[in-house]
Structures are given as C-alpha cells and as structure tokens.
Length: 331
Ligand code: MLT
Image 1 (tube, rainbow, N blue to C red):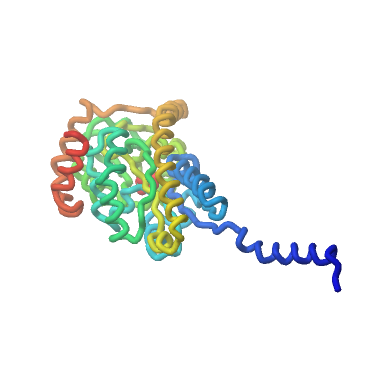
Image 2 (image 1 turned 60 degrees about the vertical axis):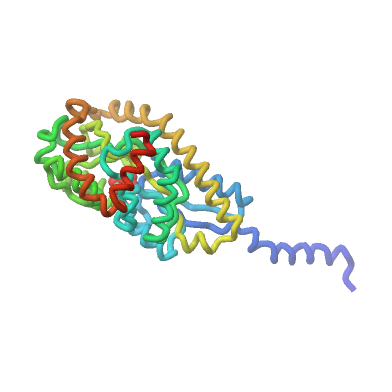
C-alpha cells in the first residue's frame, strides 16, 4: 500500500500530463503584406491581442509581415485552400479573385475616411464579404483603413498628367488601377507588392501609389523623392480568414474571430485619424517633396471617372452597384 504522501504527487503529475496538451494555445498563422509598423500591422496585432483575450488564451495568432508568406495574391490562394489561416492585404489584390470588390477601387468613388467606413460597414460591405466567401474562399472579418493612395516617384514633381508622361509606374495586378493610369495617358507596369520595393530600388520602375502610412512603413522614402497628393483610391485592407478554417472552428471561436475583427476595425479607423498627419510630416522631414495635383485634381478626376467607370460596371455586378454605393454616400 502507498501512503497518501507518495500518491498525491503522482496523481498531480499525471493530471498535469493529461492537462498539458489542452493548455497549449492553438496557434494560427497570419500573413501581412506590408512591413511591420503600418495600418495592416496595427490591425493584425490588435486583432491577435483581442482574439487571444476573447478565447481565454486558448488561441493565438502569429503574424508574418512583409510578404514572408508569399505575395498578397499567394496568400489568398493559400487561405482558400486552408493552408493559411489569416491574411491582411490590400483590397485591390483580392479583386482578381472576387471582382465585385472592385467597387471599392473605382477611382474617386470614396472621397473621405468616413465614406470608406460607411461603405465597408454597411450593407455594401456585408454583400462584398458574402461575395468573397463565394468567389475566393475567404471571409472578410476586419478592415484596415489606410488613407488615400498617393503617387510617389524618384524623378520629378508631378502636378499634371503631362508631368506623368514618361514615368514608369508600378501598379498592383488590378485592371481598374491599370485602366486608371491608361486614362491618365501612360501604360503602367503591373507588379506584385512583394517585389515593389526592389523594383523601385533597382529603378525597374520610377514610381508607385500607396497611402502615406504604407510609404512610411515600407521605407519607400529611401528610394522615392516626390509625392503627389492624389485621392483616386482610398486604400482599404481587409483582414480575411480562410473560410474552411473558419467553418471548422467551434461557434464560440467563430464568435471571437468576428468580434475581435470588428473591434480591431474600429481601432484601425482611429489609428488612421491619429497617425496620418504625423507620418506625412515625417516623410517631408525625411526629404520627400509633397505636391498637390494641379487645379484641384480636376483633370485626373475627369479622365479616370469617364473612361474607367463604364468599363467595369459588368465586373462589379452591374452599374446599379455603383449607383447604390453613391446613394449610400448621399450623392
Ligand atoms: C499594393 O499596392 O499592392 C497594395 O496596396 C500594397 C499593400 O498591401 O499595402
């Protein structure tokens, strides 16, 4: 017979052995297209913290920034196959997989951060989320609000479309954005985001467009000198979860994902409003020269809206989708 003094530690050790695996947090992987420090990173880290809290530490998310898990397009494919759990990427890089989200990159549709929020959080956002589940096998559970995509280049100040001529501009592999530059009179160079810094550094391309906060997070100030403050696209960057991964979670975990996504989205909006001006000043302090487009951007706006919008009515699901978005925005 064993005494209680001998038995109790054995029982305690055995129960630890049984309890140990359950105590290990299940870890999800999140790809982040940008380098650490921008709006994508802010959304991702906020989501990870909230999700871990909401699951009582049973679930954890590891973030892999700066395209470590492949191009933004690759991450959509991998999430669709269920080999990647989460990804944060620009909405323009989801459009090739789910064309109706192209609505959000129609040039000059969204004219302020508030409008971006209104479109993504209401019935339009809900419909686009359903469509990406259907078309691309990923579910949008949060949004980073990143600000307007401004044009940067290494060669000269650009105010007019005439100034743009002769510059080699990188664009995402997004037909709406390619068409916008064509309407402005040049043929841009489609290139994956993960190759863009090197492309700029090696002067394969002269310029690109992305928000101030992204230009800063990606250290583009090291390889770009001029900024043109255009406002053709307000950058929206969804946090997506693989639909098959989402579906395989227990209801309480799904709930935690959705709630953490919503709260992180709210945080992202505040972060943009608090940060963008500071970053803009910092870029100027680092030697970037910021210019406004001529005549309140009139020429840029007229060319892009008249030439580009009708070309994409069909892919966004019909002209009525654009009409509805404009109605939501009170136009
Ligand atoms: C792009 O230009 O491809 C994206 O907007 C970059 C990003 O994800 O920040």
